[in-house]
Length: 640
Image 1 (cartoon, one colour):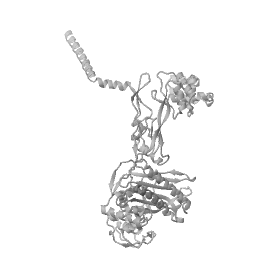
Image 2: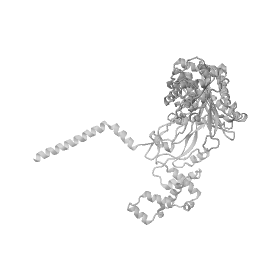
Image 3: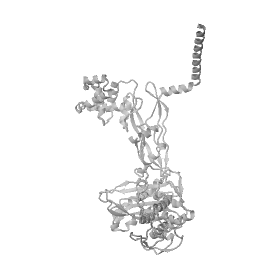
Image 4: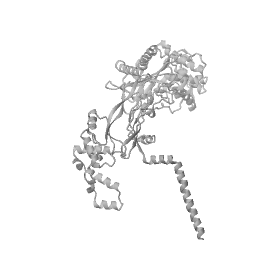
């Protein structure tokens, strides 16, 4: 029996040692993995403060946005340093820099340090409750802060208050992180700090944005700043730190991932010193399709013409702003994007971002897309002449063109902006043939057919422009016979200026192209829902608009332009009572040139350029004069 027990014991011991040997063998075989795991557990790495962002350049390589170095003072916490020693550092710093106190808790924290941690602020009964765990240490801390009065803080000298603020900055965040003490420090201050050789204090270079063309296109370029509170989780998941500077709007935000620099990486040594592992890298440059010379000229023209309209033309009291866009119609690349608003003091505000966020009724400018419904569904005979007239629906006032146009075909209908021709297309779409006082029984399906065609060109669809915040125009919700007619002439739905630009580019290329401010981008979103012959017919009609029709004089004939004008009735609130009380006129141009080799497309929208109580040439002045000046300038560029 004893022998059997010994054998069993030896066997168990042998198995035990065998397991140990196997485990040791496994550890040796996986030595690198265990070393890496140990390194991850024991090594701490931190990032430098910032690396320069990439520059933003125009299409010709001119620098629009660059970086400028600013002196920044940091504190690197020293291992095992005492509070008294840090207060001494704060005192030395306070004698060199002026830092405003913005948080009363900084002063309370300092008061507690100087007054035995405020032990006399807590009663014996409260300490007993703490021992019995009926309250916790956080409750005690809260009570101390609550019981420090304003009079107690007023006992602190100005010097002590500054020390308190600096000390708080020195202890903000994790112990091994650099602590920002002062941004944009003067050379004199930096020299004094370096000369003083203050423990843990360093002067380093940080980066700010500079704009080499001042405010030109600045709103579109965007701005940078601290991470917004509502977005902090999203940025933390991407590996950002809450102290990082990020793109907050428009191009800076859209291209954040590319523009941001890569910060230097440091290993934290056991004595809390830092060893550089990876140097900082500048962000990637962003090259735009914007031509800054064209951008500046367009902005200049808008300001000049808005001022002229307000000064020399009647009925312009509600005219405050105009918008203009220039692009390559065959790529969708934007060459200039501008919006200017005249202020009461005669200055101007850049409102270029309204090109993607504000919507307008643009009237007949969209007829190149609405007539396409007639072509696609064979709702009229191409080239056949009819006599322009009026339409009278049941219980609806008579609807006519802007004047009697006589004998017209489809090309003339575009050239002379015939409403009657468009009305007949809409009536035929419902399966009816026009007769006075008729009922169409228009349905949502009829509205959808129009809107699907409009969207095929880009009207009523997002343009995919590379700017955050793009909105859609407003689609009327009501279905009615007269509203279908209104939709057919651009007097129902609203569109953003960039939607109008995409539409005219679609006429030029036969494809809906995404709009882009980045050079070299080309994205086809869809083909226009027509065959080549039908698109060419629309081009011919819109060419006739500018050579001999309603758009004559907008663009010089020698440019052989293609385009469409529009005027629409809009309503505004003139006394800020949230009631739209005054009818105004908005004037629009959308076109491109030359016909056979499109180089530039141009859209101009002038909201509220006149009003119905006093119509004058200003209802055409805004878009026409601006368009003429912009296209003449572009002609010079083509010829040079």
